[in-house]
Figure 1 (tube, rainbow, N blue to C red):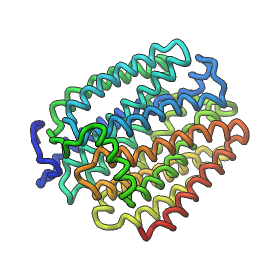
Figure 2 (cartoon, rainbow, N blue to C red):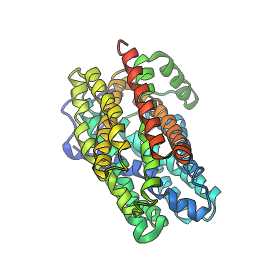
Figure 3 (cartoon, rainbow, N blue to C red):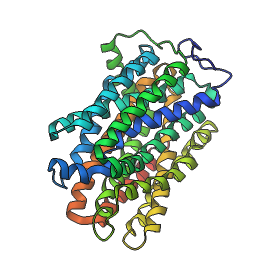
Figure 4 (cartoon, helix red, strand yellow):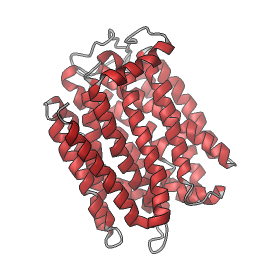
Length: 399
């Protein structure tokens, strides 16, 4: 497939996307989202460097999530109005600059501002690529393409911890952000050359484009239900990953950042297995897939709570957590993208806004809970959130 393939608004590529282009979507999406999550295994180093207390260090992750929310509200919707290739090129260069700001920060306010910008631009890139993949895919393969691209996002999210841990042990936490800036520059040329030219789906002015998001949120029941499920699921997911570094970096483990980040490799198994969820949605099995995903999400907290007994139990819990979370996420997006083909960017922005709120709440809740109730308190909080998601799905499944 050539880079300059041009489609009419709302038209898909009937012959399907080439395998190499689908993989480019997945790789670029994974690299973009990784920037948003580098800080999680580095929280203890950041707390020490900037004299931030353990209970308050979750604010670094929260600042990033605020940036995510702003991107979803004000940047991602632009994909329905302007040339996506040009928009993403500008965002990518701005993201590189934000990563450099974080790497050179000398004070907590500058660090938080840089983290907010990384969240803003990393999210805009990631979700812009997902919306582009959904718009370019033919109807019969949309779930599969979104599943592969979203698999790249999930693996990038998980490997971010491995990358951040390994590089920080070799070059300090600042080296993580300088390396990330270099890697993002490296993906710029392939993206510019290979992304299909997708004309804007509409000609709304920017204020009307933003206002239309409220209409979509009010009218689309699928978006409401699936967005709420995403909020609860990502709150549970972030409760675990934001807290994991705290017990593993303390006695009796005293693990290095590399060792802590390596636990993300375990989650890749679940993410790869869950990439088929989009195909199941294409086959009409979305509700069944959702039920299984939510059950795994809840079940995961039992082995996770046994971390003090066995690290193998921790690994099993990570696989279940990531498998359930990724399968639900892919299913959610597959269903939402089918509602309004002309509004993919706005739909993904609204859906991921639920995700950002859930992730932010999870990050705040987990550090406070760990400071007062330890690891078992974190697991109870995560299990409660997962149970709430399962109950919500059961009540709303008829919609």
